[in-house]
Image 1 (cartoon, rainbow, N blue to C red):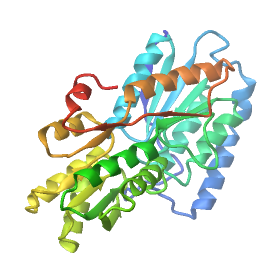
Image 2 (cartoon, rainbow, N blue to C red; image 1 turned 45 degrees about the vertical axis):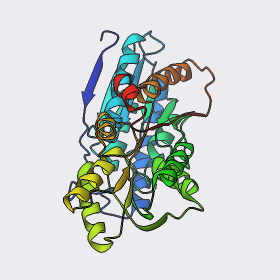
Image 3 (spheres, helix red, strand yellow; image 1 turned 180 degrees about the horizontal axis):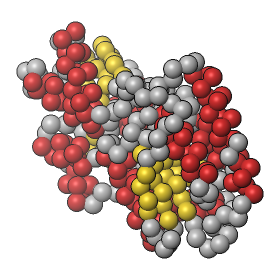
Image 4 (cartoon, rainbow, N blue to C red; image 1 turned 30 degrees about the vertical axis):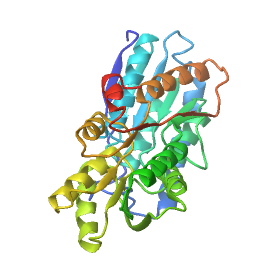
Length: 340
């Protein structure tokens, strides 16, 4: 195949049944499932190691495993991975897990079987996230984790926003701009994931010692706008005194802002995190008070460059954190025009 090509495919789960959407579709205990999938994945590594890699033959193939293609963040990462790989004459295989962690395990297994030279991996869930990393490494395939890093099996390098520092700065901004508001609701991202935990830690530091008090929080399953809308609708019914909302992603924040307006709460202070195009436009229009812009262009390019270095056995830092940029009405036009 010619260099610079990219291939998009979705792998059927096979042994895993489909049912009501949820973070895991385990129809048996999770530990048993993870054990079985680990064994299945590791059984592919002998053949993968024994064969000559495409990199040795001059063509480099990188697998990109993403949780979904609904989130603008993942769409942007994919775009810049594809662009940078094309510039480097590398081939990219793309697997969209559609928010199904079980399917993603199977998709990465297929990457290994097909002999990819490197893996760029954004876990779709938390509990089984270690399985693909361990399997790829056992097959001699370097792993670049982006945005989320499995605690017990980190990638060879981890690329993400410094969400603790960025969320702390956002929290401090909220304290300064809250005026008479003080009752905070949190619309969480996917529990157990790196960005959710880091943003939680940072924002708590940012509002520590202030008059702002958390009165409610609820987790989403996939960081999506419709979840933010429904969660906020429910929270406002239970806690009508809420006047500040932090949506852990711009999609969640946009849904929250829409729900607040529909409920007649026009003076709600709503902030997000991501700097998605829709989030930036919402900051410009005043629907969102602020967000944190992630450097998706830089992160996508860096993921490819890191994968190529690892494939060539070059040294890469274990962690490569990027600055998140506090974005308000004062500087939003800059990032709408030129997203970092």
